Length: 201
Image 1 (cartoon, rainbow, N blue to C red):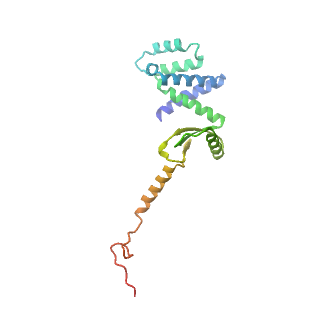
Image 2: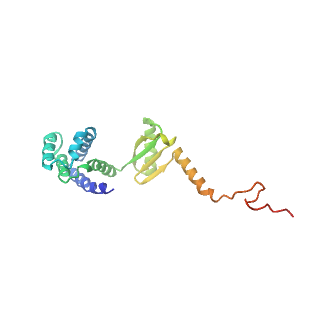
């Protein structure tokens, strides 16, 4: 959470400046592209994030590699992170840029877990239902979670809904455990254990 808080300062500043210049979609796409490049090339990621590499050397290489491939604002931002030794915040910054874009557009991403992949029609129906439920455009981001058995789990912001079969089974298990202590064991003669059944007069 601390890294998220630190990254928020950088992403907010970049978002505001890119928006002011009318370059927000372009800058966001370039940051995304660089993050993907780091994820796909371990050597590049190790170089960019390394605290050992001299900052001036890193800055020169960033300029030589990205000049003409990235806009001035994106390049200057990547260099700034390198100067501040905050390179490892870049993936968080990329995520936060998208979160700010979504909020401004009235969209809300939803993390959805399902036991099987959803087809296009099912995704459309899910998006419609979630959007109606939350009163804004909800974008499902699905992942396959086989242990759910059936149903789905949804998280929109800090709101979490477990409508899975495994979730219902776990809820039932907890309920049974919570109520077990209140059950009174009854002996075969119908009286509580340890007590004789009273005689009828």
